[in-house]
Length: 126
Image 1 (cartoon, helix red, strand yellow):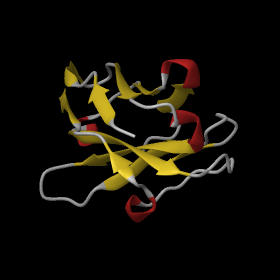
Image 2 (cartoon, rainbow, N blue to C red):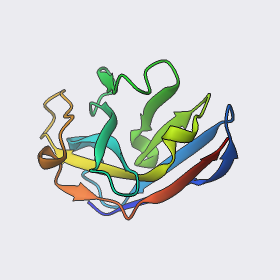
Image 3 (cartoon, one colour):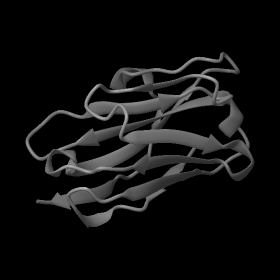
Image 4 (cartoon, rainbow, N blue to C red):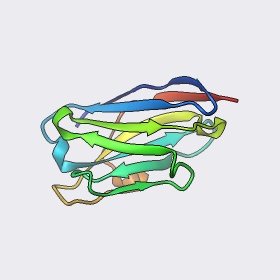
């Protein structure tokens, strides 16, 4: 599946942004989806994941209670609602898909994902 992320931008601390990731192809329902981020000079890290049915979600401790992942399988799109943003949230955000063949699961590690979007930059000013 091909992934196209959008919605990044510049926001002040305490503000909100909503990232979107649209997938091409008819196999979106067979993918678990995730969001990762990479700050300058740092490794790519897990942010959030969601199973294909939306039954299961998981968040990194650093974003729990502030970020919400969701998906619309009819629109083949996954979202990341980010509230109460902090300067340390500044990074390039990547969406990713993992083929799970209808297994209702999710993954939290980079190596478990098969397809990646191009990234969208989020900058949070203090």
